[in-house]
Length: 94
Image 1 (cartoon, rainbow, N blue to C red):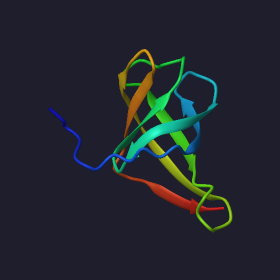
Image 2: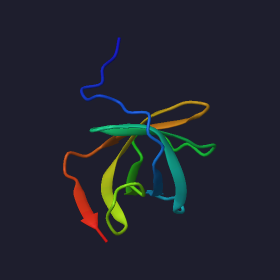
Image 3: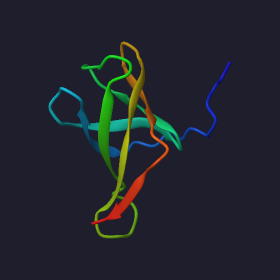
Image 4: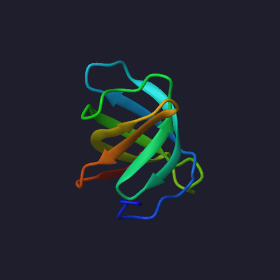
């Protein structure tokens, strides 16, 4: 049964993610919703790991639109991991 509260979109977006205790890495989302995202990676982090993510929306007609998000790793699989965003979000147009 689906527990998601917001609609999921299969949109590949470029992101730079920093996990607690790990080096920064560039990734691409597989899908994203208003409260989380899933991305493919060979290096998953343990559930509960905190992260900070800069999400780049290159197709939006503005100069370097970026959404900055924080959250927690919610689940892991052999193909990647799902993250949950904190309720507070900061939007930045750089």
